[in-house]
Length: 422
Image 1: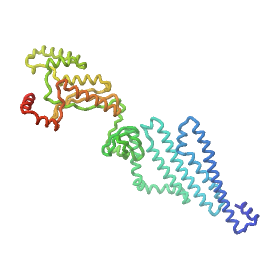
Image 2 (image 1 turned 90 degrees about the horizontal axis):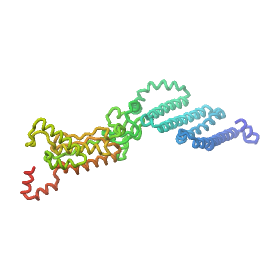
Image 3 (image 1 turned 30 degrees about the horizontal axis):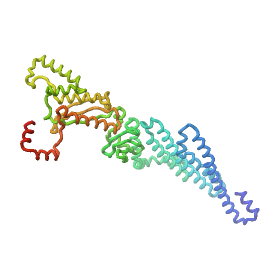
Image 4 (image 1 turned 180 degrees about the vertical axis):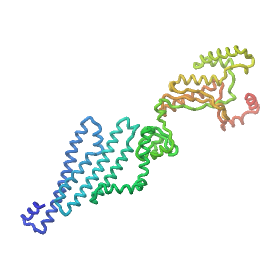
């Protein structure tokens, strides 16, 4: 300033205006210096760093570049220059230094946030991130850094020690508990979810209370985002996964088998003992040949052992069409390429009802993909519905309007004959 003032006086400038002109020239000089320094930092230094980052084999520095960490560092350079030249203006030195330090602290906060986010992005490139997400912890760290940064800014502007403000936080703890209630609950829930491995990104969960039925796409401090199968997004509070129950299908997906549990309802009026003609027919069915032969030997030995009179079919043991059909289904499933043979395979009867006798299929497919699973299930029941009449069985179905119409159009003699047959 003195050099500029003396130079202006030598050129015959009015002494009254010398101070104002010197101040203006100095401000312009500092401004130009800041612009030049920022330009050099952004256009030269950062370009060199970018060239180095993109050419090496490491991936973590690419993420730092995507998060613009280096660009944010360049904002500190002008603030340092302004702080250094603050002594040039003695009357405003204290104020300029405070403003410069405040700006540096704010840029530092933004830089720390970017670094934390970049660290989370780097962590997500590893497989462990799916089972141990840290996004919630990153958000907590950002909150803590922001609070500490805010305290430093206020302390700097007030000219007081940050410790004085920190001592007052204890009195405001109740307010903080109220303001950050969801964040604190989310933090506790996040720790429990992660430590107990309850959910991961990519898990299929079902939570009817919140209308969630789909894959988890994001786990954050306060919320868990679920993309439903209709492509809608449901946001569930993190602590709700601790306080409420939900179904996680990860066990099914990792087991390698997806359960089929569905029943055929057999009309009980079609269940009967097998005649000789039926047995001759069944023995030629590929999946029943060995079963029929072994069963006939077993039944014959049993009846002979206990000297059972077979002139009446009620006496002793005999094959039934429902029993043979059940054995056929079991053997059919054991040879089906889409069924997991290492998991439970059952064909069982359930309690009869007004809809007939439920014959339940309880097996697991060897592919957990939804479309493949549905295709295998449909293929099995397509075949069973079609093959049931070959065993003299009828699948139960409530009468339709067309059935009632056919009955009304039939002559009374046929109706009487059909009733007698039943």
